[in-house]
Amino acid sequence: MADVVYLIRHAAPPQHRRNRFWGRGDPGVDAASLAEVRTLPPLAWERPTLVLSSPLDRAVQTATAFAAAFSLDVRREDDLAEADFGRFDGLTFAEIEQRFPEDASRWMREGDDFTFPGGESVAGFLARTEQAWRRITALPDEAVAVVSHGGVLAGWLCLFLGMDFSHRFAFRPVCAALSGFLRKRDGSGWEMVFFNNKA
Image: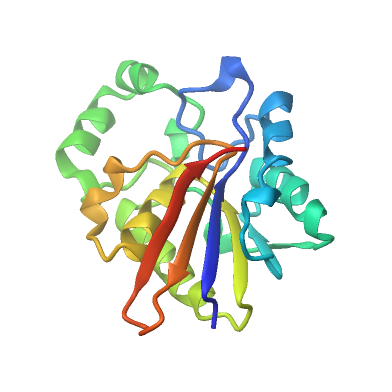
């Protein structure tokens, strides 16, 4: 069972595509941010034996850059994808409020009970996030690196730290940064060894 888990948020989108809700859309990746990913492997105190990635292109590019240092292939896992924001995808919050004012108001009012128009329910996304975490932390590989998205990783941080999902907004996984978790020897849970590290 996995005793070390590394979390990496994908490289940042190009500057003009940042600060938007990117779910299943493809904003691309910034070349400088992707280059930062190649500096992360020396931070891994335990060599990963498996690199998993969201199937979305920005994550796959990031995972491939990280995995190359260990001569590993990247395995894509569908349940590591970001939330499906439906018609909100690629928009800023101001644009969502302007184009879909009633939906934006419902989102703020309903929170985790909201379903993105044409997309995924928040509750469904959180359930998928938890199932993926339980499955991957039970893998036989001792050290696993996971490349995913802000929403997924913020939820995983709560799970590693034994916190309710409602605290996920307190975490801001940085693009092209590495976080590390170590399973406690007594099996009682996990400890966060570092968070949002860059070389």
